[in-house]
Image (cartoon, rainbow, N blue to C red; front, side, top):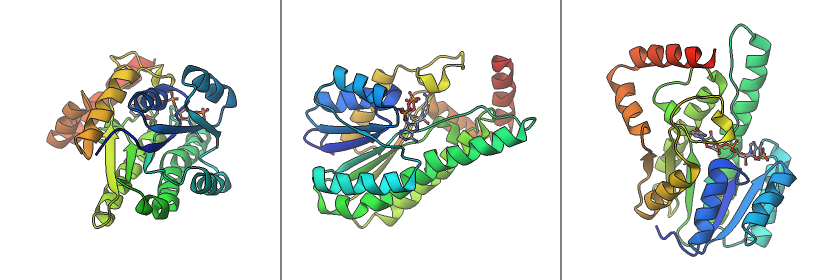
Length: 250
Ligand SMILES: NC(=O)c1ccc[n+]([C@@H]2O[C@H](COP(=O)([O-])OP(=O)(O)OC[C@H]3O[C@@H](n4cnc5c(N)ncnc54)[C@H](OP(=O)(O)O)[C@@H]3O)[C@@H](O)[C@H]2O)c1
């Protein structure tokens, strides 16, 4: 699809991957709206990119999602591209079951239910626009579970499956559904991982190229290797990754 002249909504566009995507879309002459919870982060993003439209929204809150959709319908009726990027991640250990469960609930709400609900609410508007698309940011952890982040990993697996369901159910409509599966990226979300990470700007560039070339499935960089390993010997590589990650976090 054309990567110029769109009206793009990026959830969680105030830092990390979302902000890099906002910058890349602005450079290609799109109208870009970002949202996040923290007003200060939104203001900093706006200072960096004055053409941005910013909205303070907690995407995990159902009534805020509904208000957001009403605002988009009235103020940005040309919206044709939704990027479901906002996400949270917690480390989890079954030795601390209450904490694990509480965080897993938040992760399911933010990483899976919120983007699903927002996509469904925006479908009628997207149907009316030129070249409508939904871009879902999942993770390479879909191929080999991130066992040290159990709630995160499971919420992203659910989101990945739902992305494929949406793609099939929307196949007879003009709405295209992309899935981006990034490897580790240098953002606050995974700052505790001492591993090689991709820079958000490089990832954003690759995502825009993928969208332009209609690559609906976008495993990026080492995510391709993980996809292969996850198919070859899923249990073996999950065990190996668990040992490596727990050692690294000690
Ligand atoms: N970094 C990686 O290695 C990596 C790898 C694979 C996939 N991903 C995915 O990439 C996406 C972006 O992550 P990132 O690494 O860029 O992390 P990040 O820098 O922590 O950015 C997360 C963004 O989401 C927003 N956000 C979180 N909860 C929200 C909520 N309830 N409502 C609205 N906005 C919310 C945050 O803003 P506020 O805090 O102000 O709300 C922030 O703008 C996530 O979905 C993540 O799972 C990341």
